[in-house]
Length: 184
Image 1 (cartoon, helix red, strand yellow):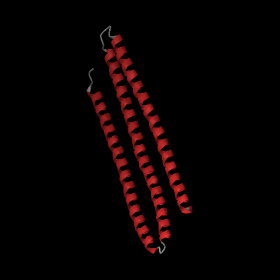
Image 2 (cartoon, rainbow, N blue to C red; image 1 turned 135 degrees about the horizontal axis):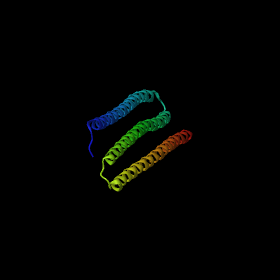
Image 3 (cartoon, rainbow, N blue to C red; image 1 turned 60 degrees about the vertical axis):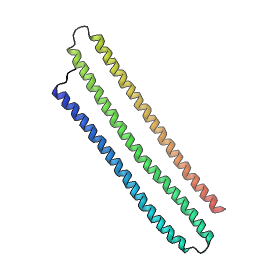
Protein backbone atom coordinates (compact mmCIF):
# COMPACT_ATOMS: atom_id res chain seq x y z
CA UNK A 1 0.00 0.00 0.00
CA UNK A 2 1.47 3.33 -0.93
CA UNK A 3 0.34 6.64 0.42
CA UNK A 4 0.68 9.95 -1.33
CA UNK A 5 1.75 13.08 0.53
CA UNK A 6 -1.80 14.38 0.85
CA UNK A 7 -2.97 11.16 2.54
CA UNK A 8 0.01 11.19 4.91
CA UNK A 9 -0.56 14.85 5.79
CA UNK A 10 -4.23 14.19 6.47
CA UNK A 11 -3.39 11.16 8.62
CA UNK A 12 -0.76 13.13 10.55
CA UNK A 13 -3.14 16.04 11.10
CA UNK A 14 -5.86 13.70 12.34
CA UNK A 15 -3.42 12.07 14.76
CA UNK A 16 -2.24 15.46 16.01
CA UNK A 17 -5.81 16.67 16.51
CA UNK A 18 -6.66 13.52 18.46
CA UNK A 19 -3.57 13.93 20.63
CA UNK A 20 -4.38 17.57 21.35
CA UNK A 21 -7.98 16.71 22.17
CA UNK A 22 -6.79 13.94 24.51
CA UNK A 23 -4.45 16.40 26.24
CA UNK A 24 -7.26 18.97 26.58
CA UNK A 25 -9.61 16.39 28.11
CA UNK A 26 -6.89 15.29 30.55
CA UNK A 27 -6.06 18.86 31.56
CA UNK A 28 -9.71 19.84 31.99
CA UNK A 29 -10.45 16.84 34.19
CA UNK A 30 -7.29 17.42 36.23
CA UNK A 31 -8.30 21.03 36.73
CA UNK A 32 -11.76 19.98 37.92
CA UNK A 33 -10.30 17.36 40.30
CA UNK A 34 -7.79 19.81 41.79
CA UNK A 35 -10.52 22.44 42.19
CA UNK A 36 -12.78 19.92 43.96
CA UNK A 37 -9.96 18.85 46.28
CA UNK A 38 -9.00 22.43 47.13
CA UNK A 39 -12.61 23.38 47.84
CA UNK A 40 -13.03 20.29 50.03
CA UNK A 41 -9.82 21.05 51.94
CA UNK A 42 -10.82 24.66 52.48
CA UNK A 43 -14.30 23.66 53.65
CA UNK A 44 -12.88 20.99 55.95
CA UNK A 45 -10.52 23.47 57.59
CA UNK A 46 -13.36 25.94 58.11
CA UNK A 47 -15.63 23.22 59.53
CA UNK A 48 -12.99 21.94 61.94
CA UNK A 49 -12.19 25.45 63.17
CA UNK A 50 -15.88 26.16 63.72
CA UNK A 51 -16.37 22.81 65.50
CA UNK A 52 -13.42 23.42 67.83
CA UNK A 53 -14.83 26.82 68.81
CA UNK A 54 -18.28 25.36 69.40
CA UNK A 55 -16.95 22.53 71.56
CA UNK A 56 -15.27 24.99 73.93
CA UNK A 57 -18.66 26.57 74.63
CA UNK A 58 -20.37 23.40 75.95
CA UNK A 59 -20.65 23.05 79.71
CA UNK A 60 -22.38 19.66 79.74
CA UNK A 61 -20.44 16.65 78.41
CA UNK A 62 -23.62 15.02 77.04
CA UNK A 63 -24.34 18.10 74.95
CA UNK A 64 -20.77 17.99 73.64
CA UNK A 65 -21.12 14.29 72.74
CA UNK A 66 -24.43 14.92 70.96
CA UNK A 67 -22.85 17.78 69.06
CA UNK A 68 -19.88 15.57 68.08
CA UNK A 69 -22.31 12.92 66.78
CA UNK A 70 -24.07 15.59 64.74
CA UNK A 71 -20.73 16.80 63.35
CA UNK A 72 -19.70 13.24 62.49
CA UNK A 73 -22.94 12.72 60.58
CA UNK A 74 -22.45 15.98 58.69
CA UNK A 75 -18.85 15.04 57.89
CA UNK A 76 -19.86 11.66 56.49
CA UNK A 77 -22.60 13.29 54.44
CA UNK A 78 -20.08 15.80 53.03
CA UNK A 79 -17.63 12.98 52.32
CA UNK A 80 -20.29 11.03 50.42
CA UNK A 81 -21.18 14.12 48.38
CA UNK A 82 -17.51 14.81 47.68
CA UNK A 83 -17.00 11.22 46.57
CA UNK A 84 -20.00 11.54 44.26
CA UNK A 85 -18.54 14.73 42.75
CA UNK A 86 -15.17 13.05 42.21
CA UNK A 87 -16.83 10.07 40.60
CA UNK A 88 -18.81 12.31 38.24
CA UNK A 89 -15.61 14.02 37.06
CA UNK A 90 -13.83 10.70 36.52
CA UNK A 91 -16.87 9.17 34.83
CA UNK A 92 -17.29 12.17 32.54
CA UNK A 93 -13.62 12.04 31.60
CA UNK A 94 -13.84 8.33 30.85
CA UNK A 95 -16.87 8.97 28.65
CA UNK A 96 -15.12 11.74 26.71
CA UNK A 97 -12.01 9.61 26.20
CA UNK A 98 -14.13 6.68 25.02
CA UNK A 99 -15.79 8.90 22.43
CA UNK A 100 -12.39 10.14 21.29
CA UNK A 101 -11.11 6.58 20.88
CA UNK A 102 -14.25 5.54 19.00
CA UNK A 103 -13.90 8.50 16.63
CA UNK A 104 -10.20 7.79 16.07
CA UNK A 105 -10.81 4.12 15.36
CA UNK A 106 -13.64 5.04 12.99
CA UNK A 107 -11.44 7.48 11.08
CA UNK A 108 -8.64 4.94 10.91
CA UNK A 109 -11.02 2.31 9.55
CA UNK A 110 -12.32 4.70 6.89
CA UNK A 111 -8.76 5.56 5.90
CA UNK A 112 -7.80 1.90 5.76
CA UNK A 113 -10.83 0.99 3.63
CA UNK A 114 -10.10 3.92 1.33
CA UNK A 115 -6.53 2.70 0.95
CA UNK A 116 -7.69 -0.85 0.24
CA UNK A 117 -10.08 0.42 -2.42
CA UNK A 118 -7.29 2.49 -3.94
CA UNK A 119 -5.08 -0.59 -4.08
CA UNK A 120 -7.97 -2.61 -5.51
CA UNK A 121 -8.22 -0.25 -8.47
CA UNK A 122 -4.60 -0.93 -9.37
CA UNK A 123 -4.51 -4.58 -8.32
CA UNK A 124 -3.61 -7.24 -10.85
CA UNK A 125 -6.33 -9.48 -12.21
CA UNK A 126 -7.25 -12.40 -9.98
CA UNK A 127 -6.56 -10.62 -6.69
CA UNK A 128 -10.23 -9.88 -6.06
CA UNK A 129 -10.60 -12.73 -3.58
CA UNK A 130 -7.67 -11.52 -1.51
CA UNK A 131 -8.91 -7.93 -1.45
CA UNK A 132 -12.41 -9.07 -0.51
CA UNK A 133 -10.92 -11.13 2.32
CA UNK A 134 -9.02 -8.07 3.57
CA UNK A 135 -12.15 -5.91 3.35
CA UNK A 136 -14.14 -8.56 5.22
CA UNK A 137 -11.45 -8.74 7.91
CA UNK A 138 -11.46 -4.96 8.33
CA UNK A 139 -15.27 -4.91 8.53
CA UNK A 140 -15.22 -7.72 11.11
CA UNK A 141 -12.60 -5.89 13.18
CA UNK A 142 -14.65 -2.69 13.01
CA UNK A 143 -17.75 -4.59 14.11
CA UNK A 144 -15.80 -6.15 16.99
CA UNK A 145 -14.55 -2.73 18.12
CA UNK A 146 -18.10 -1.38 17.88
CA UNK A 147 -19.45 -4.27 19.95
CA UNK A 148 -16.68 -3.84 22.50
CA UNK A 149 -17.39 -0.10 22.72
CA UNK A 150 -21.08 -0.73 23.29
CA UNK A 151 -20.31 -3.33 25.96
CA UNK A 152 -17.90 -0.94 27.67
CA UNK A 153 -20.56 1.77 27.60
CA UNK A 154 -23.10 -0.59 29.17
CA UNK A 155 -20.60 -1.51 31.89
CA UNK A 156 -19.94 2.18 32.52
CA UNK A 157 -23.67 2.90 32.77
CA UNK A 158 -24.19 -0.05 35.12
CA UNK A 159 -21.26 1.07 37.27
CA UNK A 160 -22.58 4.62 37.31
CA UNK A 161 -26.03 3.54 38.49
CA UNK A 162 -24.48 1.17 41.06
CA UNK A 163 -22.25 3.91 42.47
CA UNK A 164 -25.18 6.31 42.67
CA UNK A 165 -27.31 3.68 44.43
CA UNK A 166 -24.50 2.84 46.87
CA UNK A 167 -23.92 6.53 47.59
CA UNK A 168 -27.61 7.08 48.29
CA UNK A 169 -27.77 3.99 50.49
CA UNK A 170 -24.72 5.15 52.45
CA UNK A 171 -26.17 8.63 52.93
CA UNK A 172 -29.49 7.15 54.06
CA UNK A 173 -27.75 4.78 56.47
CA UNK A 174 -25.78 7.65 57.99
CA UNK A 175 -28.93 9.74 58.41
CA UNK A 176 -30.83 6.83 59.99
CA UNK A 177 -27.91 6.10 62.30
CA UNK A 178 -27.77 9.74 63.34
CA UNK A 179 -31.52 9.76 64.05
CA UNK A 180 -31.20 6.61 66.20
CA UNK A 181 -28.21 8.06 68.02
CA UNK A 182 -30.11 11.27 68.75
CA UNK A 183 -33.11 9.41 70.20
CA UNK A 184 -31.04 7.10 72.43
